[in-house]
Every structure is written in C-alpha cells, then in structure tokens.
Image (tube, rainbow, N blue to C red; front, side, top):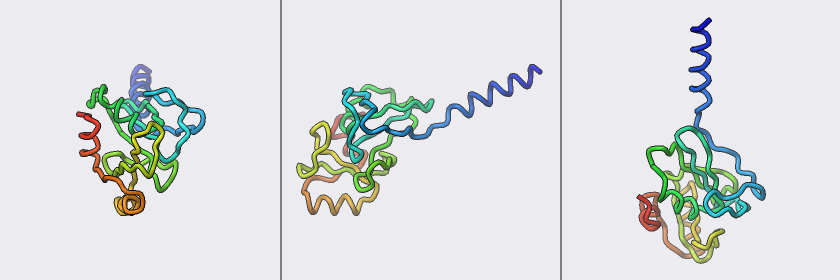
Length: 144
C-alpha cells in the first residue's frame, strides 16, 4: 500500500509540472508587468516558469522588461504572439522581431514579433523599421 501511495505521489508531481502555454483570455487577463488588461492578440507574450506557471503580458516589451529581473534558470519557456496569426503564441527564441513606427504596440515600443522571418521582412518593407533576432532584441532592451 505504501509503495502505491509513493508511486501515486511521484506520478502526480511528474505529470502536474508539464510546461505548456496557458490560454490568454483577451479582454480579461491582466499584464503581469504593468497590470493593464491584455486586449491585443498580435502583441501579447507569456513566460512559463520551470514549474509551468504562466505569466502573461499585454506587450512583448512588458515581457522583456520583466525578464530583466527574473532568474533565467527558473524559466521553462518564453512565448510571443505571432503578428500575422493573431492569438497564436510562438517560441520567442525562434521568432523574428520588428520595431516599426508604422505598427503601434500596446506600451509604445512599436515592437512586433513573427514566426516567419519572410513575413516580418515584408512588414519592414511596407512599414519601415529595424529587424531583430531574439539575441539582438534582448540586447536592445538590456536583458541578460
């Protein structure tokens, strides 16, 4: 009986720590960094800690600013909205970023992300701005 209880407890811990994105309830959820309601499904972001707890943001710039004070060893996943597929979250490290005065973002950094580099390049051609990778956008926002 003790072995069964021990196995059950271990299984519960193992399966309850799965790291997967949480649904963002646009118009209801608040930004973890600035407390504004998340309404823009093209610019939101999310950090999942190593235990699977989700921290939601109304803008990528809020997430980047919050990332400055986080212990990176405790981060399980970082996600950003794909501008061309509203509401779809993509892995931040794999996204391409654009800062363009032609595309406002919720907190005024004019920061947009996309899964497909070609689509972000096309946006740059039509709206202007500068393209960044995950590494270079973190450098711009002074995130370690």
